[in-house]
Length: 373
Ligand SMILES: Cc1ncc(COP(=O)(O)O)c(C=O)c1O
Image 1 (tube, rainbow, N blue to C red):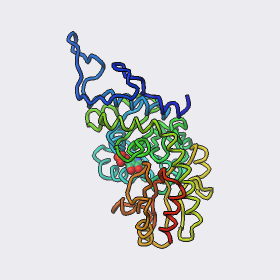
Image 2: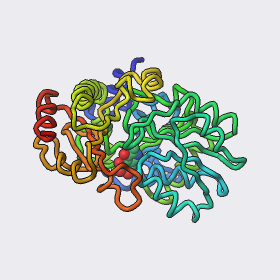
Image 3: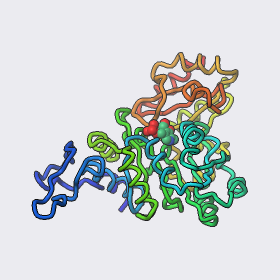
Image 4: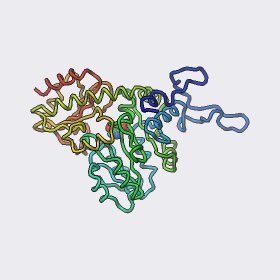
């Protein structure tokens, strides 16, 4: 079955009790048990373990990422934390030097308590990743495209490097979404999404997901962390993400079309120093991206000639693009990324990150044109 069909149908069987086509939101925190043996009568016991709406979402998450099993979380960060906590104590992890900044903070502030160590490495250079492996490396974690520099990691190459070292390859695929890139099909072991972004798709729900190549020991351990530490998704949030997945494929097509038009415009503008978007042939990861993604996504970043002041001034003038962090909603957002990331930021001071939405591309370009004047 093709991606679009899975995205529309997975986890969407009509409700057994009523025949309803739209999935019910099962808000119950607790479920009836049998009189005879005290066991759950319908497989559900307590909301923090599992709930029926979350189960539907997890069926859909596994299907769209070509995974054997998936887990839904209350946020992308709770998904990331649960996975790290499921690694054996003493593990060494390679993290991307460009990636979602809170993952680096998670590593610096919490890895020592979980007896994990890490190094930051440029994930777009497979040879450097190989050389950075240590005897205790149990996981390579990459983002592709990366946040915010849009670096591209060669997922198949990193999977081979990881597996030769008896390590896992974990891919944060939030920017690409499974509509454009399915890391498990390229050899990855686990895929993370902040479902707060494109999967939810409307800037109105927080969530995270992990899709696992195999329903194996790592899956069981991560699920145990979720159940006991409690980073679960609520039924309503599960329902919203499930609903978002139904329209993911056509939304991504338009995000990509609009982003490409915006990138082409910015690349020719005299006030723009650089555009980071993998569709551009000048992007160092263009060929790998073209191989492993079906299109290049709705995220891009660009550097304004000058410094922080010039970049902030451009963002201050936009009218269609709203100044805000986050991404993946229907509305276009622009963000001075270093300001959002705060004191640990590694992002160039003149960089603006853009989440290209679903407005008409001519209006988006006109807005940037007047902001750059
Ligand atoms: C690439 C990426 N991964 C993970 C996260 C964390 O997700 P959440 O904010 O849902 O915890 C984000 C959030 O912006 C992100 O951009």
